[in-house]
Amino acid sequence: EPLSRGLADDGRLTLGVSAPVHSAEGLRGALEEARHARRVAAARAGAVCAAGHQELASHVLLLPFVPDDVRRAFTARLLDPLRDYDRRHRAELIPTLEAFLDCDGSWTRCATRLHLHVNTLRYRVGRIEQLTGRDLSRLEDKLDFFLALRMS
Image (cartoon, rainbow, N blue to C red; front, top):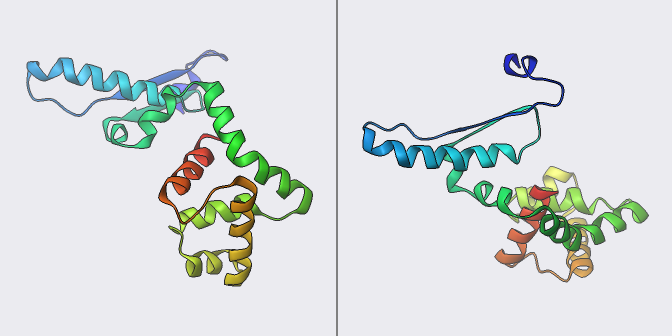
């Protein structure tokens, strides 16, 4: 917050932090690591954003390098059918999908979290699969949904 106050109305500050180095030989690598971390920070919303070296070993590193039009097309292809269905039927498919993925695909934990009977959860997940042509028992499809939700 103190940094935000010093910026102009349209200004942004993004920071990237490398892992500590203990010799001059490590400075070049640390600088490159800090540059990558700054790109991760720049992809975030907000006037002041920072990212550290620990975030470079995650999908978080890859997402900022995906072009915006590709991100939009990917998320639209996966999530728009669910959003449209939710809008028309108030079915809560997007929140169900988020909870299901957050519970690592555990039917019991997810049903408990959403205060649903497990059969209701199975119906909703089945509807998600039907609308998207994806199979939430497959890791690849779970990963695609996870990334689409993160990018949306």
